[in-house]
View 1 (cartoon, rainbow, N blue to C red):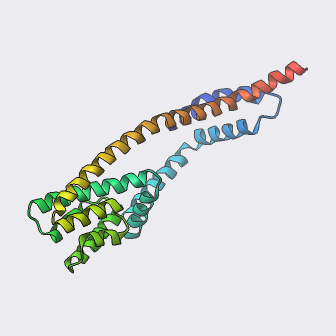
View 2: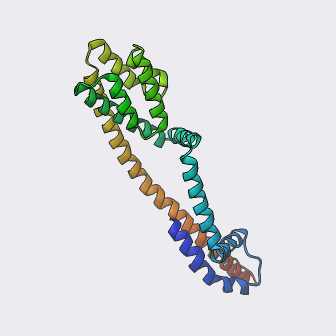
View 3: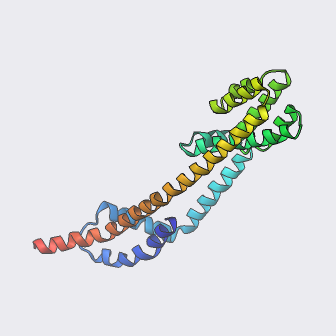
Length: 227
């Protein structure tokens, strides 16, 4: 979509500029705005590149700071749909790693440390570190997971059942299987939804650009017809 916009603004629309200049009437606001964007992009393209590079570099530098990483990861979890997908992905990774390590006979504290290191979102990493500290003091794993406010009630409930029945590993395995399937289904759904949305958006942009080009000609024809 961005490529189509750039091609139209830098190659297609400039070819109509001479014709627009010959028109002896005031151009519509939309056409003037599109022409200004085209002229700006064609003559000052390097400024756009510098701005984009500056934004990307600035975000990368900010992301490597402690506050930046926390704020960006917090923002990721708040994005509609995508935030829920990130939470489910983190739950699947945590449950699968924990169940595998516990079944291998690793102590829970060490398993929590390793599980925390697999988290891509720093909020989940910090949360599991707090969980590890609580469990090391003898507190139940399920209560500590709930206290983070990050894990869905289902994870907490399944771990709680595992603690009551003495089979935490199996409950974590079941949770991992459930969330892995949820992630796969939601990813496929998002992909299916995004494709038509992108096509519709691109069509709207192209139609808007074409209307900006042909609107002055339509006005001219109407004026000549009335004359």
